[in-house]
Image 1 (cartoon, helix red, strand yellow):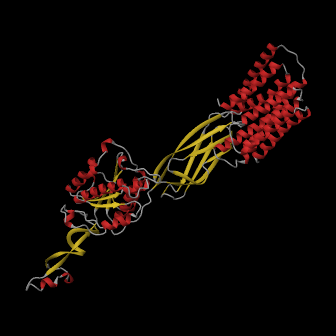
Image 2 (image 1 turned 180 degrees about the vertical axis):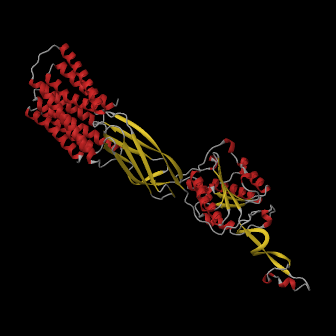
Amino acid sequence: MKKSVLFFIGVILTVIIGGIATLQRDVLVLSIPLIIFLFSAVYHKPEECCFSIQREIQPDHGFPETPLKVKIIVTNKGNAIHEIAIQDVLPCGLKIKEGKASLVTALNRLAHIEIEYQIEAQRGHYENFEVNLRSHDYSGFFETSITISSQTLLVIKPHYPRLSRIKIRPPQTRGFAGPIAARQGGSGIDFFGVREYQSGDPERQINWKIASRYEQDLFTNVYEQERVADVGIVLDARQSMDIPGPSGSLFEYSVIAAASFAEYFLNEGNRVSLLSYGGGLGKIFPGYGRIHKDRILKALARANPGKNYALDNLALLPTRFFPAKSQIVVITPLSPQDIPVYIQMRAHGYAVIVVSPDPVSFEAALYNDKDSLALRMAYAERNLLLQQIQRCGVQVVNWRVDQPLQMAARKILSRQPAFSRLNGLTA
Amino acid sequence: MNTTKIHTTLVVLASLVYALPYLFLREYWITLFALAIGVCWLLVEKYKIEVFFNLFFIGFVWLAVHGCLSGLPLPLMLLGVCINLAAWDLTRFQDRLRKIKIQNPEPRLVKGHLQNLLLTLCLGYILALIPTMIQLSMNLVVMIILALFLLFTLRKSVITLRSDKND
């Protein structure tokens, strides 16, 4: 029973006791309107609620800051209700942009009411929505509350910058023509070598300079074939690697980088797979094309940092998930204990790029630290770590998240990596 | 319909219903008390302080009881109680709306609420006037038994009415 009912009953009893104590009929009579009011409230007391909820979100997928229209239709399948408060409880990450998610109204039997408003959402995968319905009698003495869950899918994909001019050189390519140098002679653009002339070779490919040195022999230029390749993207979603901040955590930047690289490699025609390594293993198997891009973006929308003691370091990274000798792009803030994993990956014959959102500058920005001794030491430690990883033959993109990703990526990845370095030999 | 305006009118009316008879009785302090309750209630409503309106409701009920004991006309005191009850109910109604940040409630909701309130208070006022027309002399024990019987009958009738409504 609500406090207000007890208070009201208390007032009525006080007036009645006062009337009896003073033996005044008039005082007793004063309690009659109060008693009638209480009984009227009991008569109008709301019963078990029976509602059906329909929810529409238009569009049901998008990017952060895209305005989304939410429409809820509540139908009363029970008796008429004098006063009902409908409140749509939005999951964490959704924000009302325009309109209201709550309403108070009277609802007759089988009548329905619509609530419409606009929201904007952060990256995420939203599935469970709840509507809180509280019905009162007209005096507000009695209340019946019910929470109805509805399953509507809303996918907010990460907003990512477009990358351009990234050169990779995996040890093995696939059979189809593409933009990646395949380390095999054939038709292409880049000069690869010279071989003896064979009948049928086009005349314009004859290397006349070399042929002039020999009396009888002719030589033909061979160009490097260009093919598509397999690219595997590893998103480090370990809780221990994440740094939460007021305007988004460091993990959000990892997701942005993963989306940018996935989009770039897919647009280039490569076969791309995704592995999210954190609370569990989220896998998107290798594939091509626009639909596959959408699949990867949806997986990235779902990705969240998680804790799993078994996956606390990268040692259990299932490298066999990626095709042999393919290109692997690891998006991670980097940890010293993961260095052996990169060495192992290189030993297995994978070409590895590490894209590392810089946790030191991110955390320094949070504390507004610009030049403290601790910060300089942290930078020195990180530079050492980056050098150690580079020495393993891994290309490292150190991304200061306050700068564009394109700038950081172009600095390191715009030129084709040297053969020797990819083979583990330092220049 | 603007509930705030109706509420303000009701509080002013309740203050006057209690203040004026006491003024005729030359009970100036109680007159001032009635007016002060009205003013405070309006101020509290303006600044949206939730706790105090129960105190104002009790204050006006106390004025009605004191008025009956001081020999003021019962119909006037009953009117005061009904207006006070309406003002208290409207304050709580506005408070419920405020809690879920509704500024302009649906006219259908407000109209339904006011209709129910008016009907209940009119019924209460008329039913309360009936005993003033009947002179009965009875034993206290009989009266208590009668009151209990009345409560039991009312409970039964409410249950019956509610089950009829469901059918």
